[in-house]
Length: 63
Image (tube, rainbow, N blue to C red):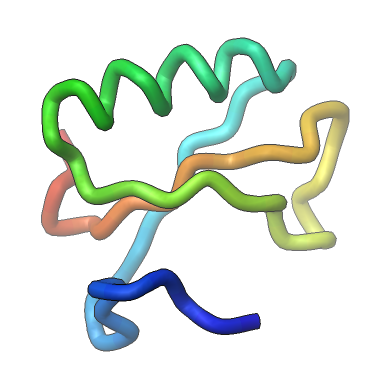
């Protein structure tokens, strides 16, 4: 899978998970509105639970 344009592979990244996709979409919209550089994708198989979406973000952006 190819990374989106502008995504820096050298930056450590964290993920934000939720139990349902609608909450992930709400969080994505809020973070994008506040100009966070994020990506919505499927979680790694080893942590996949009920929701098939996570938000990935550069750890440098962590609050």
